[in-house]
Length: 135
Image 1 (cartoon, rainbow, N blue to C red):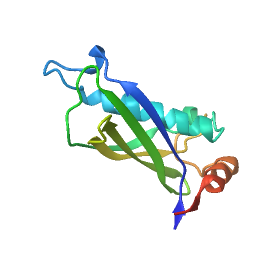
Image 2 (cartoon, rainbow, N blue to C red):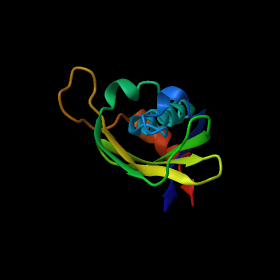
Image 3 (cartoon, one colour):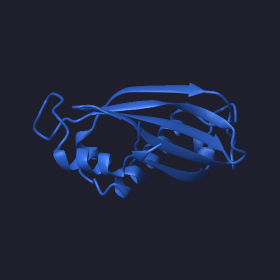
Image 4 (tube, rainbow, N blue to C red):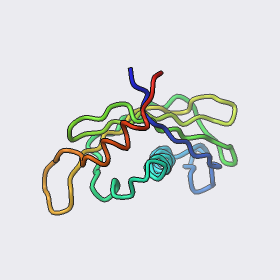
């Protein structure tokens, strides 16, 4: 089985990331995941990914609360690369290693000027697959 590439970002839970209950707002998880996703595609040298990869599904499972001032790590890993879609698994964990949220994000390739999903360009497939290795 191939092991696809991954990337992590570390952040501090800021006041703006919290809600009236004092813990992270649900939208903060996706912002951190998107930051890790951006880091992943920078590592793969694929800057053209974002303008043509809308989300078609996001699944988030919340397990624990994160509090103002706490350090977190968001990790994104490509889980599956299809003909027109790409699914990433993610995890957001506290500095103590407790998983606060996990899930998946699926995007599709919709090139500029197109209104429907198209096959991923060969350079993206090559970059993702050349970064894959044995588990």
